[in-house]
Length: 426
Ligand SMILES: Cc1ncc(COP(=O)(O)O)c(C=O)c1O
Image (cartoon, rainbow, N blue to C red; front, top):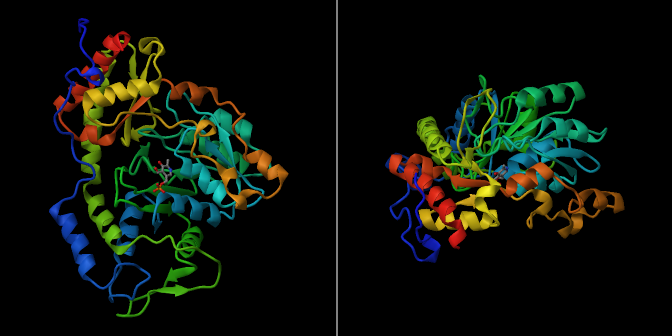
C-alpha cells in the first residue's frame, strides 16, 4: 500500500471504521428461554431446595467435563474461586510456593496469596507469551507445591515440557484455562493435561454467563474435595433428589466457602456450550484471514503458538508491532490511536504483574505473616525482561472482532496501516 498522509481519528480525521462490531456477549432466544425457565422455577441455586430433578449446575458440570475430556467438573462462581479451590484441594497454604507466569491476569497470582502461599513469578516465552519452561526449571525449590501455566490469549503453554518438569519434580500442574475453553494440545483438551484445570466464564470470555467458573479433573478424590470446598463443605448426595429437600448434604470433612454458580448461570452456560465450537471455528477462520492481512504490513507479526496446539481458541487476537515502527510512542498511545480508528477498545497485553497496580498482596493485613513471608511477596525489584519487553510491543483485540466479516478484518488492517503511516503527525 502506498504511503499517504491522512488525519488520524484522534485529531478529528475520519475514522477507518464507524460501522458496528459483532455483539458480545450474544444471547439467542433459546438461551434466553432457558434462563427465564429457571427464573420461573423455584430453584435459583443448588443451595435451594431440590425440584426433584437434576440441577442445571449438575447438568452443566457433566456437559463441561465431557467437553474438556475429563471425568469431573466442579462449577464455581468465577475463575478466581476455581483457582482457589484447586490450590486448596492440593493442600497448598502457608510456607508453600507456587510458580506463576509474570504475564497473566492478576487473579492467577492473587489466588495463590489468598491461600497464603507465595507466587514465585517466572518470565515468558516472548514468541507465545506463555510461561517459559526453562524459567520454571530455575524457579523450583523444595517449597514448590504447584505450577500454574496460563494458556494465554489464543495459545497454550508448552504442555510437553511442563508435563515433563511436573513428573520429574513431582509437582502438580494447575492449568489456568480461562482464555481457552476447548483448545487442544494435540488430542488433549486444555485442562485435561495437568492435575486440575481451571476456567473463567466472566463476561469477556468465549464461554460466559457474565460471571462463572469451573475446575476440571480426572481424579475423583480431588473432585469431591473441590465440590465441598466451593459449597461450604457440602456435597451432592447420591441417588434421586427428593422434591423440596436439599440435595447437597453437609459432610464435615473440611471447611469450605460459598463459591457456587447460580442455576440461571448454569442453564445459560449449558446452552452456550452447544454453540461454542461453531463460534470457535468462525473466530479461527477469521483469525487466519487477519493473520494474512497483518503479515502484509511491514513490522506487524501475529502472535504465534506452539505447533502442538491442534485447535487454537481465540480469547484475544494479539499481534506484535516492531518497535521501530512506533517511533517514540508508547504502546498505550498506539492502542488509543487504533481504538479511535476502529471504534472498539484495542488494548496492550497484560502489564507484567511486578509492574501492575492491581497486584498488591501487601495491602492486606492477613498476608503479613512474618518478615520472611513479606520479603518473598515483594516483587517490585525483580526483572522479567522478556515480559516487560513484550508489554511494549504487543497489542490485543477482543475476540468479538473475529465474529464479524471480511470488512471488519480489513478495517483492522487498514487502521494499523493508517496509524503507522501517520504516527509522526501526532
Ligand atoms: C488468566 C485468567 N485467570 C483467572 C481469571 C479469573 O477469572 P474471574 O474473573 O472469572 O474470577 C481470569 C479472568 O479474567 C483470567 O484471565
